[in-house]
Amino acid sequence: MSSTPLARQSIRRRLLAFLVSVLLLLVGAAAAVTYWSALRAANDAYDRALLDPAIDLQQNLRMDNGVPRLDLPPTAQEALMYDQADEVVFQIRAPDGTVIAGVDDLPPAAALVQGHHLFYDVNYHDKDLRVAALLNEKNILIQVGETRHKRNRLIGEILVAELVPTLLIALATIGLAWAGVAHGLAPLARVRTELLARSPHDLRPIPNDAAPVEIAPVVDAFNGLLDRLRNASAMQKRFFANAAHQLRTPLAGLQMHLELLLRREQAPDVRAELERLHKATVRTGRVTSQLLALAKAESAPGIERKFEPVDLYQCVEAGAQQWVPNAIARDIDLGFALEHVVVPGDTLLLTELLDSLLDNALRYTPEGGTVTVQCGTREGVTYLSVEDTGPGIPESDRDKVFERFHRVAGTQGEGSGLGLAIVREVADRHGARVAIETPEGGEGTRIVVLFGTATRERRDAA
Image (cartoon, rainbow, N blue to C red):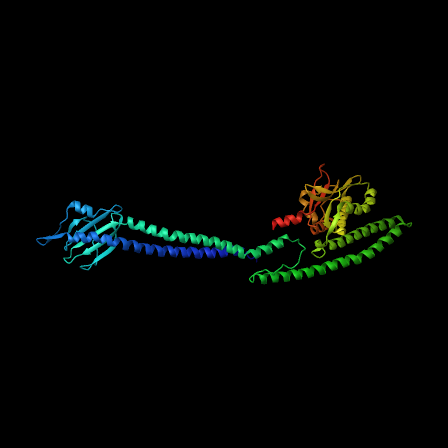
């Protein structure tokens, strides 16, 4: 039964989402409170002005034979109702509901006490009106209504005046929160950068002196895990090296005895078996030596601090001499094109790297072929390369050949699949990168070790 993997969550995103949500909630609440305050302020400011025309109309009412009449000329009415921004209407109703003056269809105010006034909102001809209603002592209803243009403009001005600074403060707060979260998570970024810059074999503890209190337990737990891994790796490598070392002596003795037997007169079938046994012993000894070299290449982290300047010219010249008889025996032209270039490194490890490259090249190059060793500088980068005229390595296998015990399908030879793994380990120790290229002629393989590029690439990635 498979469980669905949980989506990874971002601490930065969660913190910022919480802060932004709270700020938006506060801005929304501030907008609601500001709108309510602006509405009250606008109504308070304009309601008194709206009541004045109602009072003026009341003062110009006359009674003719008990019938109320508005004693105000049309021009005076027009002047009284004039407003530059809003449309103003009025209505005067007699106690029996008869409209004395003004518009006929303005709905009357409800529950109005005699001698008091009332303000209310109404929809009139699809327009929102604010109405001031006044009921005098003779139960005559005077109503004056105006549209809300001035009020809405005042509300908008108040909202802009209040909310724009609030929004600017909110945006500034979000920016400060973003910077604050980034600053708070900087220790995690530093830990990530340090881990990315390390080689796969660097199991040193992460410095936690400057780690914040919140992530110090995580760093301590991770350092504990690294310590257990370092101890387990050291035990495994010690066992690996000791086992390989213990095998070398009996294998060397067995090889020597087989060579002595082959020098004597033997029956043809016995000689054939002894020769096969001798080849198997030589191959086993070579594998054992490669295992020792691999264990040495995987030695304790921090070896690069003990590196000394190594002249690749001298290193290659000294290390390649033992391979000349092998090349002559197989009729292979072993050539050198060397320059004096210096790299920080370990001479023994670099010799093991060269031995693995030459062993690999001579093993897979057919008789009459060519193997060329070069070192120098290419585009400002120091390099060491071994080129052969063998069958070549397909593009699909160029990453896999550096894995231990991997061999390209269909290739001839008795390789163990450890040579290029040793090359990769030694190159990693020296902060170098290994590249497989096709020579200019299109045949064979060129393996190039570029010094200093792997460390730079890890630093750039971090």
